[in-house]
Image 1 (cartoon, helix red, strand yellow):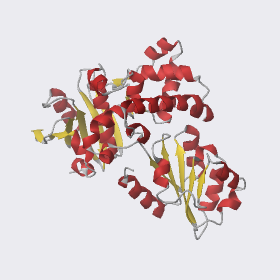
Image 2 (image 1 turned 180 degrees about the vertical axis):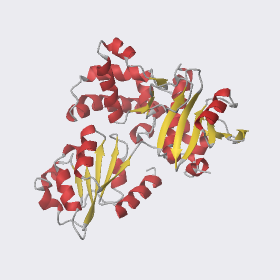
Image 3 (image 1 turned 60 degrees about the horizontal axis):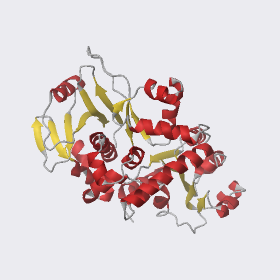
Image 4 (image 1 turned 90 degrees about the horizontal axis):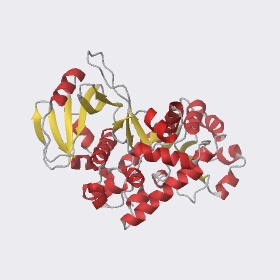
Amino acid sequence: MIKRAKYLQRIETALKRSRVVALIGPRQSGKTTLARQFVRPESLNYFDLEDLVSIGRLNEPMTALQNLRGTVVIDEIQRRPDLFPILRVLADRDPLPARFLILGSATPDLMRSSSESLAGRIETIPISGLSLSEVGFVSMTNHWLRGGFPLSFLPNSDEDSFAWRKNFVQTLLERDLPQWGVRTPASTLLRFWTIVAHYHGQTWKSSEPAQSLGVSEPTARRYLDILEDVLMVRVLQPWHANLEKRQVKAPKIYFRDTGILHFLLGIRNEYELYTHPKSGASWEGYAIEEVLKAVDPDEAYFWGTHNDAELDLLLMKNGRRIGVECKRADAPRQTPSMRIAIQNLELEHLYVIYPGEKIYPLADNITTLPISTLANPATANIFET
């Protein structure tokens, strides 16, 4: 089992200070494995709402929960939104005999229910798939190809991994989304999702996919919202500053997991990955996602002007502005775009992530960083110094 020390520490800290802690992330991202390191599944304090026994135990939820002590885990909480008002009552007890660790797949209803019913009582920890720091740099190519979902990353063959991702996408579209109230046909969403794959790393224009699908632009935007809500797609918003230059105002689209991206693009193995026309965009998106996992910024944007000056990431961290460029090049060089970004955005430093091996300065406030540095759990400290 791959140790996920960063998440375990965050969960442990959250349980000490918050009455309810929610692990929210895509299905199969490892939430259950993390929770079982705090409460064993055979314990009376563990409820799995996909298990008939647990469902039966919660027929009378107040009776089942009120006498428990310590940490109580409720998995697949999105299946029982009626539990949130009860958790509010139980979390308000003084003294507090139990704290609740709830797990759920990211859905709009879940986020709304938790924020409305447990306001001031709940701490949310977003969970993603395995990061580069968790799998190690030696596994980077497999991680980039297969993505971070544990059951996609771990199989012995690329063929088995590809088959798992196919089943994952099918289950999400045909079972999960309808259960969560999405009424759009699975075939339509699959076509749309495949179209979005070709926008990976590009600015989003609803008109083009809308025309391809024969739907309105508001409908295409709603489809994109669905993929964003279930944490399959990252919609990176542009940063607007009071500048004279005309700035890009459309968001950029990135797949959060490159394994899912590669499935939709039909990329099955390392050879196909390196020879595919979207290989460069895929790598840059992969690097961007790993930077966000490593740094955990307060806010993140991209920036661009219509004069072709751009910045892949503008990170706000502890009151500082940090720029990040991701370049799939052997030896990145300083560009006019970098100088413009530093000046116009008042960046404290700009880092260039690349697939090489050496850290070296391009200018006083521009530094190249090998992507291997993102495999070091202490990477966040690099960006903070």
